[in-house]
Image 1 (cartoon, rainbow, N blue to C red):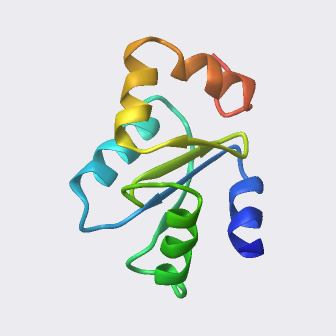
Image 2 (cartoon, helix red, strand yellow):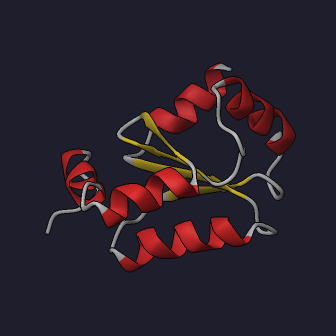
Image 3 (tube, rainbow, N blue to C red):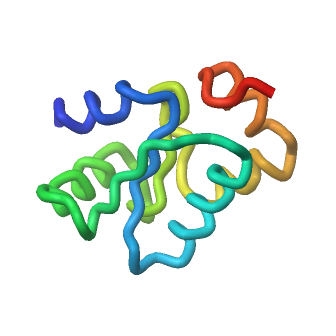
Length: 102
């Protein structure tokens, strides 16, 4: 899906979420508390949300929310993001992508 690739590549951090998902809220809060200004797409609120969710599934995202892309690259879901955060790999990744300066 070309529009999904465009959405992913336009910003340094892109998060696909749903308002009804508690893990989505957790991941959004993590990035915002770190001082990152991610682009957030709420798939249960936007047009073509189901279509985008299907495209994420085709990329291998399971579950399909939350899904995080940093620097245009798929990082994964909540488990992958939290693992990166706990092993102190997330901040350097965000700095390389230009999403954090400190």
